[in-house]
Image 1 (spheres, rainbow, N blue to C red):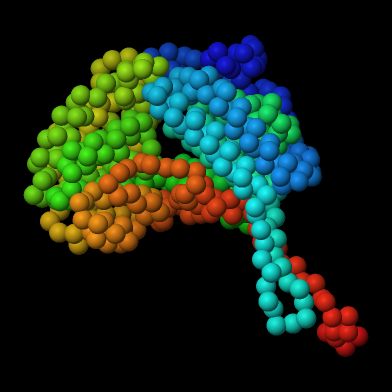
Image 2 (image 1 turned 90 degrees about the vertical axis):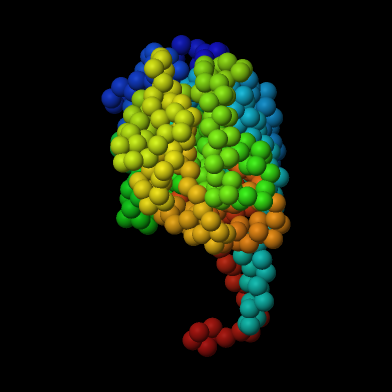
Length: 492
């Protein structure tokens, strides 16, 4: 926690509001090292009081932030990106320790945060309206305006990545933000806000709430000063947030879970397909909304693919997140580890077989082995519910039509992939798989330039790209009468 200590010294962890740490007053939140199960630190829930202070700070900072020209805001965002690059090692080490993410993955994700601010820096002065040729004597044009203060709620599996993912477009559009990361992983989000301020962002333009969802999170969603709510997390919590926001007529963006189909045909490069399938589910210990957790394999090569994937899964190195050779780290928290064990145990009790893995590793830390489940129907709970761990279910199929039907037989619609040597098949299948992102002969490539989001239980709205920027603006139409002699409605 060197970077944290260098920045805040021995200050108690708390919410970050208008440039200061504000200690909470609620229940204690205990953070545990997922790799050792040893206590890391404790802090108190910020509750509704911290939210009220943060919204007030964001409202006050809004006039300053929006008072800058668009080009000036762009230069600040670029400076934030440069500052993140200068702090990648420290941010990544803290992220790895708190989340349990292998350090090489944490470095890659933190680097992407710098890219996010740099990308949206270029968009800050390019949010153009349109002139509309209305059939009257008016000059009618549109402008894009920020919402004001937006609430953003991010998960524990990639806190610094998802913070940058949402903060950069919101700020580029001229909004100010109250960000609430998971109570389990607030540290890197707080540090990111401090780094942004040191780079020139006005204090209060980004505030970070450290606290629980039912207390601080609920107040944030329902606060009258919040104009829009953005949530990244589980479908169950997403439904609650959408309902609460709807009661207050607040628009939402929901980026939720997935049960993504990874389709392997028999006419492709099997070595690449197997490597891609392993990365799709086992990287990040499967704690990813786009994890390729349903592996659909054409029957002709089904046995060979499972054999190769099993050998690869068994060879992956689990260990300390800070170890340079670690490929799969621990599950972030005990509750999630227990949920994985319960879901897999139920599947095995129901007749499924574990080709590899299938039970918790007996060692310190919240480790769960890379697991392949065979003998599963697409209708089984393990194939329909998000496990959010390093667990893949393998399902054979016969024809292209069956593969598409299986892929779409889910309530989710976040991502999917197709592995094939046929260009025509690649385009046909990609066009018919109902998901917000479809990869062809690759998996899990994400960049801030492309839109990201899902259908169905995977949520609605889009993050990243120009689409993500537009989520943080609303259109205003301006009608200017150009005919001085034009009649008014009553003829005057």
